[in-house]
Structures are given as structure tokens and as C-alpha cells.
Length: 59
Image 1 (spheres, rainbow, N blue to C red):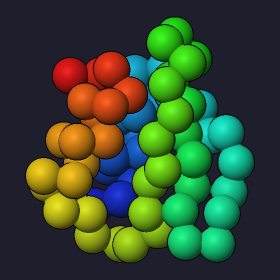
Image 2: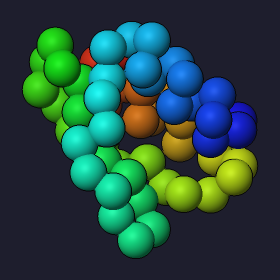
Image 3: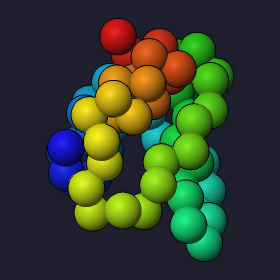
């Protein structure tokens, strides 16, 4: 999955960028308050993308 697609899905689900990091960006779900780092790779493995969504409470 492309990183841009994952971030678009997160934003549509109500997540916001909490802070930028050197290798990861930290996104927070504004509804649940859960935080999850998103790597800065162009391609993110589908299993990792699903894990990120699950941890943020989107799935």
C-alpha cells in the first residue's frame, strides 16, 4: 500500500498528525486518543497497514 493512501484513509477516519519524527510520523485518533507511528517509506506492507489501522481503532 502506498503511504499516501494509508494517510488519506487515516485522515478520513478522523486521525490527525500529532508530530513529525526523523523516520516515523505519529498519528493520533482524535476520537479514541490512540497513537500509532507511521513509517516514512513510500511502500508500506499491507499487514503493517492493517495493524496500524487496527491499533488506531479504524478496523
